[in-house]
Length: 197
Image 1 (cartoon, rainbow, N blue to C red):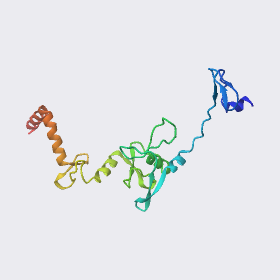
Image 2 (cartoon, helix red, strand yellow):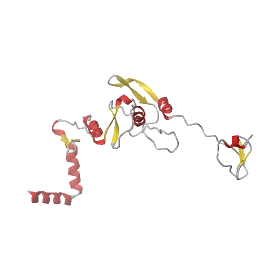
Image 3 (cartoon, rainbow, N blue to C red):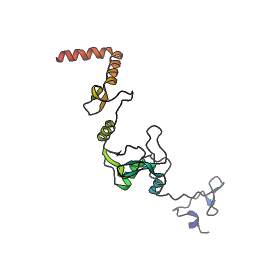
C-alpha cells in the first residue's frame, strides 16, 4: 500500500510514527494504535430538519408551528442547536438558525421574535427580526398579571417612562422595603424634593 493512501491526504509524514496499514500505526511510544478517521460532517440543515416536527395543534395565522424536538433549555424553554455540529461549539437557538437559513441574516442589534408566542417554534413564517426594545414591549403587552398574581389593569397598572407595564402594588412594596433598609436615603430624598419645591 502506498504511503499517500495511508496518510489520507496529509501533507507531511510524521517521523515519530510508523504506518503499518491504512487502519493501524506505531506511535512515538512504540504502541500499536488504530487510525481514527474523521466522520464526514452532515449539513446543518439536515440535522436541523431531523429534530423538527410539524405540530398538530399549535398554529399562527394559517400555518402550523414547527416544534423543536431537540435539546431545550430547562429554564427558558428555548431550543438549543449547534449549527456547525462540533463539540464545544457555541450554542445557538434553532429559531435563529431557521431565520438565517430561510429568510436571511439577522441585523445587528435585532432579536428574532416569535409571533406565535411558542418558544420552541422554528417556522420561519412565525419569526420576525425586531429590536430588543420592541421584543420586550410585545412580550410585556401580553402579560395580564404580575409574577405575584396581581392583575395588570385599572388603578394597579403603572406605565414606566420606558413603556414597560408594572404592578403598582408590587412597586409600592419594593419602594417601602428599600426605604426601610436605607433610612438615610429616604431623608436625603425628602431634603432634595423640599429644596426643589
